[in-house]
Image (cartoon, rainbow, N blue to C red):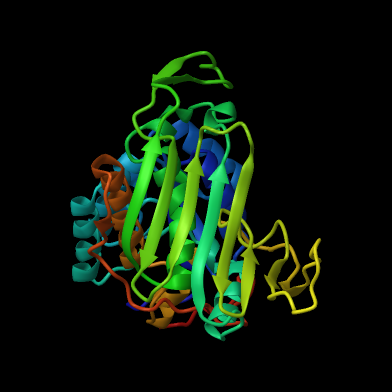
Length: 383
């Protein structure tokens, strides 16, 4: 029997990030969150009660629930592939938090498995589906800044151990600034400038151990397993390059530097870890011949409004594609290409040389301009 109406969603993982997803997915008319699962079943039950979700349990209960069509995988990075694989084998479509995995081989097998089973695999971040980033994507594709040439991005601060009660996993293999925050920046670069051809990078870490600052385990030390300060030069298949800084080692807090320079202007974008808020999306035009120092730069403002959506937009896009028979945007192939590029960055740091990125992706589409997450588009039909 062909399913119609709302798409049933189940969560595996009820940690901090689940709150952001649940805020939105319980508000979208085309989605019905039917179960929350977690290794800590008491935490899953508390989350289900808070958000009005009818059922909870462990992860297996989500996979066994016939009303769950999409599994939202919010487990730790090291278990992303394992959990996503189990969900696919249970006949569920999968939306996974970033990264898709922590190594190329298992992530590639996951993408191939989804394809062989005819199931959809989506990979965060879905921030690039927010109104700000979609506005910027359309502007660049329409020639608003001429031919894109270069990009500059930066994310720097002292690290998540200052606020996260269990930050040790963010300094383990598969995390650090490269794998934890890098997916936002590299995914946005791929959406705007196309697939990555090669990278060269340097990396370091300020200390071998850190200590938790907040929570019941405050003061507890943990090892730092990955570089915590990474500088990357990225070259793209279609031409152009980008310079990126990703750091957990600087007292200066500066997130969301993201600029794309073209032959006819520079587009200034918001933090790719947001859905388009924070500051206007604007274009700086070249100075005129009569400009004098100190220069006063004028901007064309493309969008100046706070987004009304957040995490979960990619799940909604996937749900509508499931019912409509089309493709969603934040695909497993894009998630794998971003992982491939980030692993190449790791290899470049170790080798001190350029590393080619073997994978590629087809051109990535944009959401329809009239895409409304709060519209009910999936009506139930009697069959």
